[in-house]
Image 1 (cartoon, one colour):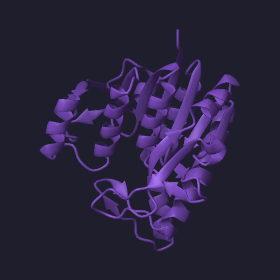
Image 2 (spheres, rainbow, N blue to C red):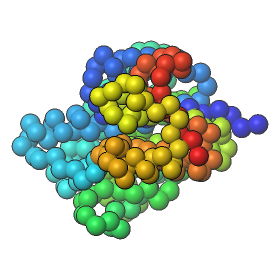
Image 3 (cartoon, rainbow, N blue to C red):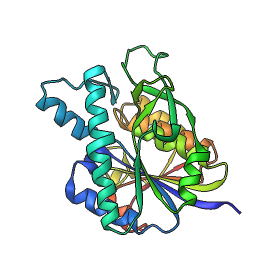
Image 4 (cartoon, rainbow, N blue to C red):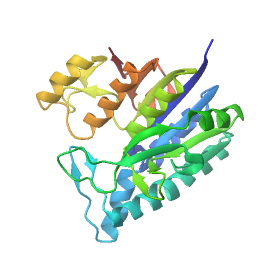
Amino acid sequence: MNKKLIIVKIGGKVTANEAELEKALFAFSKIEGKKILVHGGGKKASEVAEMLNIDSKFIDGRRITDKPMLEIAVMVYAGLVNKSIVAKLQSLGCNALGVCGADLNLIKAEKRTNTEFDFGLVGDITKVNSKATNSILEADQTLVISSITHDGNGQLLNTNADAIAAKLSEAMADNHDVSLIYCFEHKGVFTDIHDPKTLIENLSKLDFDSLKNSGKIKDGMIPKLSSGFSAIKNKVKSVIIGNTDYLINKNNPKTTLIN
């Protein structure tokens, strides 16, 4: 029987909101058994970039990362945000180890080239080191992984944290019953974000494609849901989209991805 593993990805707007982050980390610290936390920090990176008079540019919710923006991303994601999360988890009695994809060769990627637009120093994942990941979990340590990867040739790459959470879930699903939770600022996926009655409790890939084509799902939700459906297709037991209230109480509203 495979061991259970919970992987939680915390969104950038949650990491940038001190009260929401405190709630999320408290709930995460109470999860029993093996667990991994994945995070980015895009909102904080944009704030730092603005202070330095560096423009933040996006295409379909994905950040364009030139060399100055990569330096900001590494400083913010792998530095300030990662170590702040680790320190808070330690205060909650959760023994955490903060890393990025380059540490222990955990997550390798290659520079994105197969797209219409040049995203700069953005990485698409090529390999997850599940053996090293599992050895850390077996030592009763909780991994906190920032969304910086590497190409194996010394180049760091900015990589979508939703994609990291999904690919990590897929890799670990070979030997674990993996549940993936995307925790962000909304209660789930809505057909109209301004109308709470339009929450989609169960979202299929077919419905996602239809809502994406109609423009009701757009921007950052597209890579998040695309990654989630990839995980469902590749042996991940469950994928949930919700907010910090769901992390605290699993009876709260959320969206469940289904085949």
